[in-house]
Image (cartoon, rainbow, N blue to C red; front, top):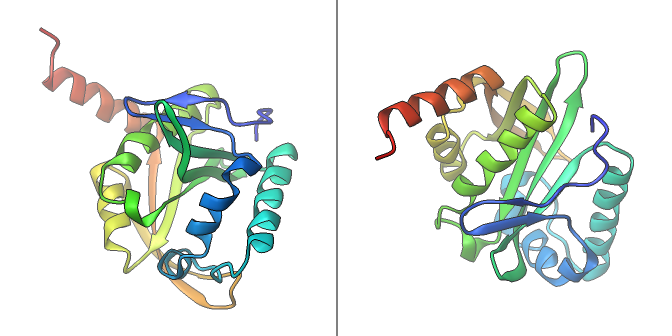
Length: 195
């Protein structure tokens, strides 16, 4: 994507975001075999490690082909897969891209994605000079929608999409431009001056 072949290591207060490797197989399988996550994301839950290995290889191949960037979320000083963020569906004519994300069930509700997504957003806006980020999440996925609203994404429209599992998903589309992101960031800094 835009000349970046692999996801660079990114850091937040508690997290390290790094490239995926096959050492993550068992944890990726736990996430991809979870029926609730599969339902929310529109894929069929993985039934065996070979299916997960194939999925991981396809993600690595796509990154090698410059189609997307894929990060694994780990805790600082604990290099174990907790979830992932992907930056994909880049459209050069619009200079926009899509964010996707997932977390293991036991890691949800701890603020990790609230912490990690802005790091990837800033990389996309600053290093890649992407003008607009989009997110599509299930219309009924209230935790995901609350996360996006907390991060000040703007609800744009409802949408439907035929998913790999053959089912139609009813989605909510959220967007944020680079200008909106930095205006919000500047406003937050001005209301919380350093002492």
